[in-house]
Length: 432
Ligand code: DOR
Ligand code: ZN
Image (cartoon, rainbow, N blue to C red):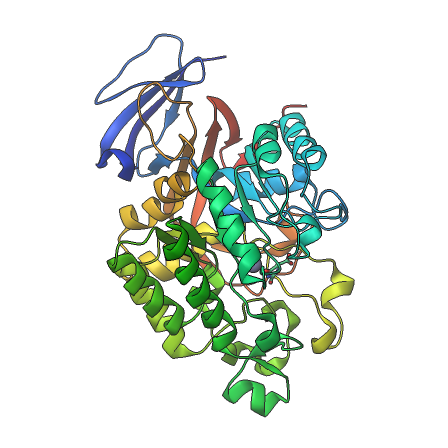
């Protein structure tokens, strides 16, 4: 493998408190040295002047649809989309068909990801068999096979006793339990946020309480079992109030938020466009403001895409029948650069932290930093180039984005995974 020398970029590595112009030398797939004015004979030079150089970004909430719905996304197509979005590592959710609730599925995902040979894939296994909320999966076996964390995402474990046991097991193995917080009795048959817009549009609402009841329960169970819990895609002011209070009391709670919940409100539903239909639903302005505050105060640890690909025939239907979900691998970074950093809610290093070392810690991996000796996973982008989102150019197999046509800043120039160039000059490297 060729030596790489990344020259004169603004290196932002929150894990090592770095934000300065540096060169990085990569040799045999590892980071060898970071310093000013490095030279190396025979190294391939990447000119990173005017560019941002960060640890490879991590998206810890992605739905790849393999096995089962390869028409929507395969492991390979999802990895390509991740690379184009600047992610060197992704964690994939278990709500496939069959469900990732056994070693055979976990091993198959790892095998296919290896064959794709693009980005690191961390399979997240189910908490309960078949996502049925009843019987726990064989956690020890799944961890041996490579499961990085556990969740019933897409669904929520409704039975508190089952959730308690899951937390007790996760503590033994020191893995994260990711809670998709949703009380199904309160949310069932709902389509959008319960409030003014659900009333005038005549659509059944999903109240904030559906999420908050479940967050309250899991905080209580985290305290009972003295275990860590990670809440994914938090969307309401009340959820954040409880999470903030729990963190202040020293409980081991972390949480993440999606770009769509940060930049859209339920007002967007006025035209019944099913690309805005997502679970949890887009909320009101008070909630969005609370999410912004949660980000800047550090109550929200990580940002995730919740990339949820769906086929055209599942979205191009009557609103009530449409599937929930938004794809996000290829828009998350530009959206966050433009709408969150651009509008002063986070500084760039704070954003990078929420896309690197924060999710790495939650997943218990050694990623998300540019420490010497580590595998060289590096993302190089520029915040200046403006692009119009064109979903037809996505490498994802699906097109269900509400952001098509938006003008955003931020383009991935290079992506390096384990010292290998995956994206070069804004294009996926053809390694056939
Ligand atoms: O909108 C969503 N789509 N929310 C989820 O929790 C699941 C996801 C999916 O799998 O499509
Ligand atoms: Zn979810």
